[in-house]
Length: 142
Length: 171
Image 1: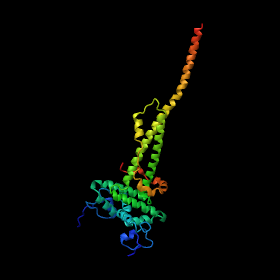
Image 2: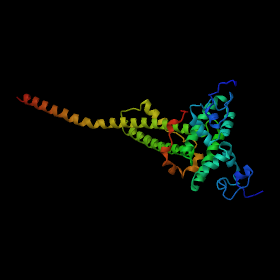
Image 3: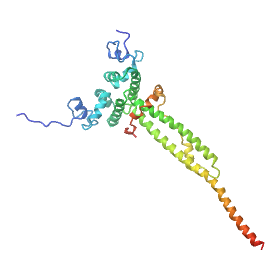
Image 4: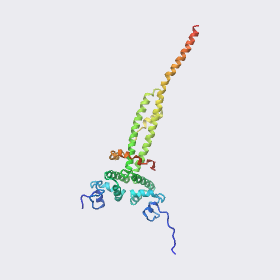
């Protein structure tokens, strides 16, 4: 028995070659990770997927596959797509709420600007009163 | 003279791809019609027919269509983004949600400022109260499990064009 086998090769009960595609990403101390990806994707599909990627991206790919596999095991119907739907709905609701608040701010802002027009009207009123009272005065002192 | 039995032309897309007889109890037939060959091809490429079959068997029949649709979506996204798949899409959406929460907080503060400053003679309307109260608690779905991808979400953001969020069938 080779104690240095990765989790994948242990699970698959095979020799772990030096260039094993799984061993950098499925270490022997984390056997569950490989069990879940194997259950959902199968070893062959995972190997093909990792092999087509450049080496520096394989770790991220393995992690994302593990996460998706976990989601699918916990929720066989929707997997992680359920979370995508939920987030979309939340974003939709938040955008709607934001639009509503911005509309209310616009209304309050426009209402706040209206009183600035009032003083000009008052001046006009005063002006017309003055001419009237002057006129009255001219009549009054006749 | 050999009797010519009519050949069945009703093989589902799965059995056509797998080159096998499509029996009356084929688990794939209701969900992978023969006129949608790409759907099964993508699911098979990512998950494998055997794994899809096992997943379908373990869910109730009335939920199998949703299961197939979610598998098809997941496979599509994984093929478009072999590194991050749906996890990348989730990271992007979470990032957007965080930005929206920030915008909502700012907007709420501005509304309070305007409402407070200019409310003399202008009472709160019912809708104002609703806006202030129902604002914003939008806890981002499943924030904790995505922490490991927080550093990569910036790089993922560059690939936003890969994710067509309009195709999700569940909303």
